Image 1 (cartoon, rainbow, N blue to C red):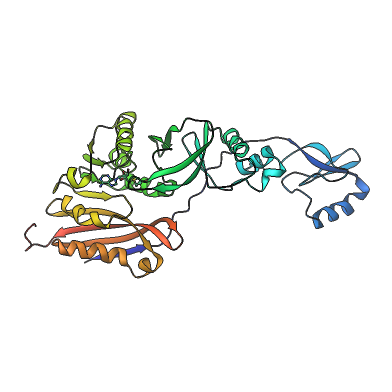
Image 2 (cartoon, protein in one colour):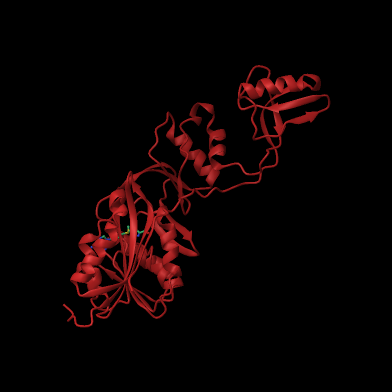
Length: 361
Ligand SMILES: C[S@@+](CC[C@H](N)C(=O)[O-])C[C@H]1O[C@@H](n2cnc3c(N)ncnc32)[C@H](O)[C@@H]1O
């Protein structure tokens, strides 16, 4: 019986906060005699000036109220934070000062020791970048404007530092790359991890869009695959794929350089990964890479909200499988991430078997 599921929970990408234990810090405070404290406290709360990130402290016959900003009569005091966790965002804000505070990006990505900031504009972008480098202990900070072209090449501008080559460690795997030349999608983290958790014992797997080894590495290292053919067309990505194979001491990846339409071995795979966007033109080829009796295929692409609602991803895959003489035994669609407004990056996992009467085309 055909199993069909749709998982609509998108992955929530959260910045990794590098938290630091801070005991005390110098902040602006207002010192008032104890007998006036309650009246002043009420006024400060009402005016939104009381900073609840810090403890109110009693010293001798006085009470010190922490303030969000300097006001007349305020002094600097060494106060204790309420929480030991101060987000890097707050630290950057404190470092750049109030004139730049409102321009500080609230989101960023850290790939190895390089920070990617979104496309922001401020009177002093370099100063903000430098503060991020210091707070997050990064060697380089870049402005990230998106990806372009067949190779999904990033469009970036270096704001601080100069070296954009780094080693990013995720799930115990080392990914070396140059962030100015290659993408590393943080939003795909769950999918990269998931690929390593599927039981692929003794399987031959073909990763048709290997990049630097995003999926090939977890599959080869954790999933138990016997062999992973990793196809990659971009010479820069291929260079780092080779680097990453040796960096992780992996023996079961066979890298194949060139366009997968020319390099991919046909009829060999128990499982095929089509980890790309605009992948539809490659779907038929993906099925032909499977062993004649069938196997698993992981088909990635982008879909509109409407298409997801109508189960279009699954229909597209089923149609192609039937055309090539396969029966669909199991099929499910998972949302990986939001790609653009109303556009989703999703993956269809499908298991197919050859129709018994069907000749292989
Ligand atoms: C960038 S990766 C996709 C992202 C990845 N799945 C992740 O987790 O971040 C896709 C790769 O496919 C490669 N590629 C595109 N078309 C190809 C083709 N026809 N043959 C081989 N590789 C191709 C690109 O050069 C790119 O490195």
